[in-house]
Length: 97
Image (cartoon, rainbow, N blue to C red; front, side, top):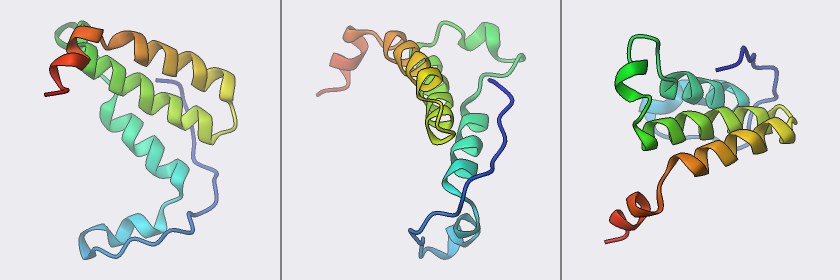
């Protein structure tokens, strides 16, 4: 994942759950970065997950969201396209039941 930092304004939407009270202090971009970091495949897990289409798609989509929020739509589009290519049609059909 690229080196990205959070410099966005706070979201106007307030969360009300006591468990998520700290999320109110984060900007939308900061939350997207946290999600991208959570979904990033580590070097330790790379060989195990590199062929896992849903894991790769989630990683790419989260990265795309960060680029989109940083007003870098071209970079976001590349990653969204990679994410959509990571999930097979057969896999998607299996989840429609």
